[in-house]
Length: 305
Image 1: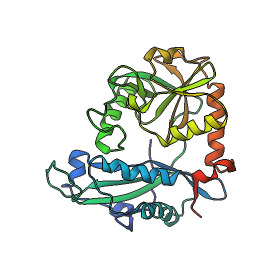
Image 2: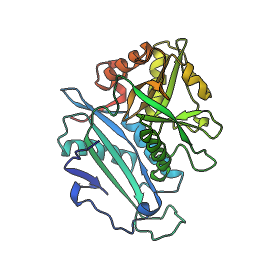
Image 3: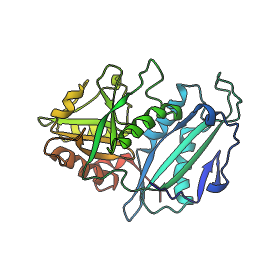
C-alpha cells in the first residue's frame, strides 16, 4: 500500500515541508521505540471535512505517554488546533488519515527516560480510502500471543509495542491471509494487530474485555454506544478461541479498518461466508455517522472548514 503524503507536516509548533522534516540518527526513539502515536480519520462529504472523535484521540495521545513518563509539551487544545490547521494548510478536501506522534529525541543510549527527556511532536496526513475489502477478509489465529500488562502497558499506543503487531501481520501474510487474530497469554481472544474484534452469536454482539490485553479502542467504544442505541445486546466477556468458528458473524473495528467483516478464519467460513446482517447494519450506520448524515452523532465530529 502506497501513501501520498501531504505537502506540509506540523513539527514542534511549525509547518514544515514534509521532505524537510528530519531528525538526527541519534534520536532515542529510533533506537528504542520511545514514541507515542495516534491514528485519526477525517472524512470529506462534498461539503466539509469532518475529523472523527478528535478530542478522544488527543486525550488518549497524551495518556499513552504518561505510562512511560514521556512528555507531550503542548496542550490538548494546541494539538487539536494543529491537526485542524494542518488539514487547512494542506487544503485537504478528500478523506484522509492523520498521524500525530511524539518521541524522545537526542538522549543518547540512556534507558532511564524521565519527564525531563527531550521530546518532539509531529503530525502528518495522507489521503486514505479502505484499508481492507469491505466485502470481507480472511484471518488466521496467529502463532504470536498479545503481550500482557505484566510485560508492558497494553493501553499505550507506543511505537515499540507494535512490534508484536508486526510479527502477527507478517505471520498472517506469509500464510496467505489478510489479517491475524491474536490470543492473550491465557489463550483467550484478544484483538487483531491494529483492530479490536467482535463476534455475533444469536443476535447478540460479543467483544473481549480490556483484561484480555485488548486496546480500549475509540472505534470500539463508538460501536458499543451505537449498539446500545439500536437496542442490540452487547456483551463484554472473555472469548474462547473455538467460539470464533461457531460465530454467526465476526468483524474488526479500528480507525483505519473502520468496520471490516471477517468471512473466513483459518479457511473456515464464518456463518454463511459473507457479510452478516448486524455487521452490514453497523457498517452503514457508521458510514452515515462519519459522513455527518446522522445528526444524532454530530457531536463526534469536528468541522475543519
